[in-house]
Structure formats: structure tokens, C-alpha cells
Image 1 (cartoon, rainbow, N blue to C red):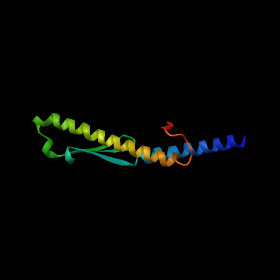
Image 2: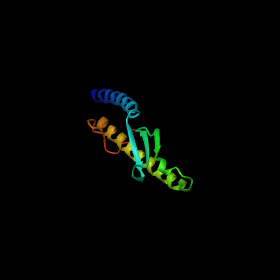
Image 3: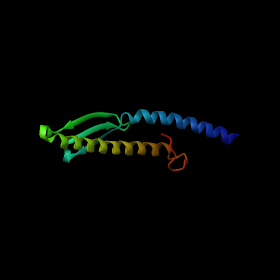
Image 4: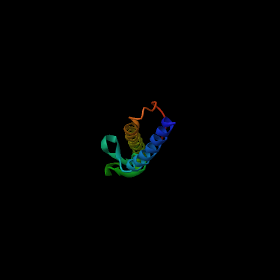
Length: 106
């Protein structure tokens, strides 16, 4: 019975830490870049886009498709970085709990 109570206490602590981590992820920001820095996207680790910057040289009517492609690339780059930041935080949170790898807690 003591093991069960210990597990319940550990689960409550994990839940509290998960909530704190979710809040913290809202403050972690990453930047995705494409076109050698011509397009950049800033987003939180919770995947909320915060800002988009486009070099003025790209704002020409006949280069719209290039700009669109660069924007997609920058967004995907930022998303990968945000996912990596979230995974890093999750590993730090669950590192000492002895949970099996790949256990989906998100």
C-alpha cells in the first residue's frame, strides 16, 4: 500500500511539474530561418507564431511564389526547433522518474 501511495504522490508531483512546464513553454521562443535569412519566423515552443520578418527585397509581385515557399520553409524550421525545445523540457522533467522512453505524456 505504501508503494501505491508513493506512486500517487509522484503522479501528483508530475502533474504539477507538467503544468509548470506548459506555462514555461509559452515563454520559450525559437526562430526559423529560410532563404539565407531573408525570411524568419519566431514562435513559442507551444507552436504559437509570434512574428514573421520578410526582407524587403523579396516583396515583388513576380516573386510571390518564392516568398510563399520561403515562408513555409521558415515556419517548418521554427516548428522543428519548437518541438525540440519541448522535447528537451519534457526529458528534463521526466528524467528522474524512470519512465519508459516514448511514453506519451503530452
